[in-house]
Length: 361
Image 1 (cartoon, rainbow, N blue to C red):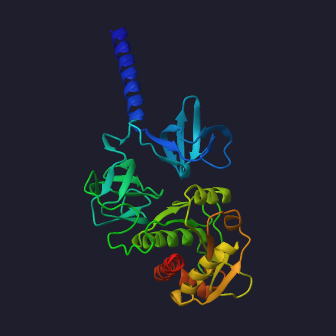
Image 2 (image 1 turned 180 degrees about the vertical axis):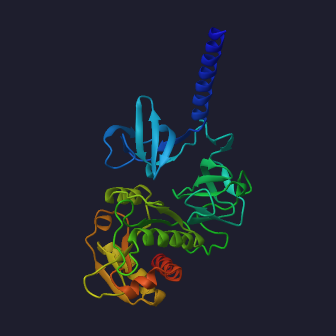
Image 3 (image 1 turned 90 degrees about the vertical axis):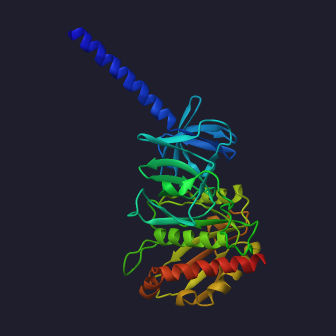
């Protein structure tokens, strides 16, 4: 009797292990490398040791994702890579993600609601990190109950209610909203929310607001304005991670950006106030001037300090037209109180968008 029980236990364990492996394999999706060479690391971090490399066009199997890093496998190469350099594979490979007892198709999904908020986690209690519009194409990369994690063509990720995502019925791309004026049609804008991850940037004098958060919040609002104007938008980061300066530039150049905008908030040992826009090369000057002229119209009540030369890596090493905006001084208590408001971030973002329209038209 004991031997029979032992045999049954072994059978159950083997079957359980088999089903576990199958369930795990079903959770994988496939992406293609979009850059010439991509380092594979042993940890999801720039500090992780390089264990291999991938070439442009390689199709890899993705089994996990954390803070913008994807766990990949191709032949004998496996490890973590920066997700910015992967695009959804167009081949007929398996494209299903699963969680628990339910599964949803990845790719070929569209937003079914007129507007849909993307959140940091699977629930209404999580912060809003962006917005989607009816007909936008998204890729489902994870699921948790009635919520799915989606990725937009420009790399933004967030959680949305699964009931508002489905196949077909979409006529709008992620380029712009249905009410788009089209004044930036055909333009690709790369937005670079400065700092991130273990680098908070400047810290507010009064409330200790962290620059990295303000940068990202402003970038999300600006991205929506630009899409409404018909532009395609790519963000160098859409989460609290810290791409290296060369990675930020590479995203700009790999996408052939028509304009690259780095978003920051300032600090000074003096009681300085207001906005400031930097350029590096002569080709960047007109863009900086167009943006600052709109900010000077009184975005949120902060005065303009004009434009200035800036020897910043993301400008200096960038072959695309570029500008870096400082949207107020966190070292100034009055500025800090103003820039922390949603109203200011909306006005500042609209001023930058209007500056881009002025520059291209």
